[in-house]
Image (cartoon, rainbow, N blue to C red; front, side):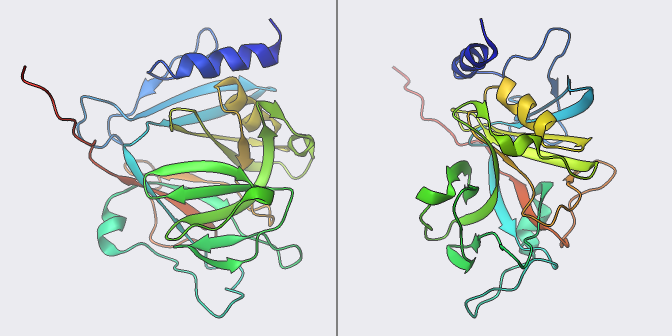
Length: 261
């Protein structure tokens, strides 16, 4: 079985519930400290895999258990259409922040698109990926087909994999620095991969092997260090960042009506 066929098998298997399969000798660890209520149904798992000699940390966020918000960094380019980008969560939402994931900032030349709350402040280009955030759901679209949505956040990023296959962008060599990438499984689970490397290949490969069909590198063009800050960790989520940031907020699991018959 070739590597692409194996990735398709993993994607199908992941739909049957539970954390996705990992290489032999590697297991998912439950992070109960980050899981929203009810804690008896864990929503956050983590694991470390080896890719191209690098240790890649995977963070798996279960579907329908979190809310997501994007906030602009203080070093993000200014709004081009007369508005302003919100840079911080409200006090109530900040108290529920479990993770803060850096997305980087755009460069002045060839600035990448950004919309918060449905309002486009930086125009979206072509040939990239768009991380679309709608309250408790995240998806990745190609920028060519993206249309802004009312009340949704959208961030243009480098697309490093599509249709389960890596793109040439994964192998562009740059500085060795903390890097991260994000993918979404078919059941809505969100996977974040982070490591220190000189390309986006290690993080992208880790997400493809875990079953993601489309992957974006968390870099808006300025090549800033990636970060994944978590509540209860050495660096908890901050109220503001220099980089544009994806916040992951605690949310109780939706109830389901049960028949008594």
